[in-house]
Length: 405
Ligand SMILES: CC(=O)SCCNC(=O)CCNC(=O)[C@H](O)C(C)(C)COP(=O)(O)OP(=O)(O)OC[C@H]1O[C@@H](n2cnc3c(N)ncnc32)[C@H](O)[C@@H]1OP(=O)(O)O
Image (cartoon, rainbow, N blue to C red; front, side):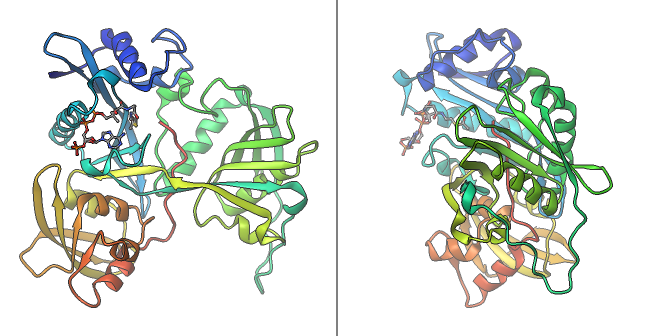
């Protein structure tokens, strides 16, 4: 087997090999806009060939920016289009593609890779850990009334306004709002221009017909949108609500739940920690479903990764990090002061011993160290290691990623 980087001329071969891996016939010729793979950059993609020249495996990366805790924005390679044709599975093709890809990424100075996993058991062995989570909230219209604010002494924000547009009539506003939102939201990815141009991915970028409810604050400034469709049924489905503040999110959710001729509203991609359920008069009015992992993180350079994010408590922790896939083991002293970290090799006794995949899970602040200690994945060497890790990795806002790729 040999692996080589693809070129634009390989797009058709790449697409057919990938689709064969999924057992799904391509919906259109490989160059068709409006399909998720049209935003793939061939020069960032790999193809694996058998010794006799048959293409059997694919993988690629998107050039994303990822927002870290503390609103640090860093490059992240979005691993995608991973597929090995059924006749060549379990012979190490993906393993070889991933080794090749990580070597390339490291040689380019990249320190983070991220992905969405088609199946959860695939990627842990390569050092990826689930780092953001998502839920689907289903609300019955008759149980979705809001309770109103009750914070003693706090004044209610001034009411904003809503406007309904066809998605294709306000694509530029939606793109701009998403970009403002993702820069503040830990765990969020950029949506590169190419995705909007190619109408790649899922709504609101894809050509699927949708309405957009735009929200403006009391001063008339745009601060959120909901992308939705009722499709003539009694269920209104909201693909995503993107809001620059909680008031806009609440107003858009309330709008979606109060739509005439519908009985049920499904909010896809509600962030863990969203205040919405707490705002309902009936706490059980929202049924949580599809509570699952979303973005997986692979750290390729521990010191660079840990010093890139913002921190919210001072402290020190010695981490013994094993990376079985890359056959590496290193011990680091992580010291945080005034929101900034230093991370250096050390020979001090460790506080925690952990696998690189578990460090990936902790990295964005969406997974508690205590949970992974209790699960038996992280070993703590002293009585206060868990508490110090908990205090150190905690963030001001839980990470969330809306982007599908
Ligand atoms: C980010 C994305 O693009 S997600 C999309 C991933 N692609 C798909 O789901 C398409 C359908 N599946 C496939 O194409 C293939 O089965 C792949 C890509 C998931 C795996 O490719 P393979 O070449 O078979 O993987 P490879 O042989 O390198 O396997 C390495 C190890 O992972 C394990 N493994 C691979 N796939 C799976 C799986 N789906 N579930 C559990 N274990 C798996 C193998 O058993 C092997 O374990 P071992 O080292 O203990 O023997």
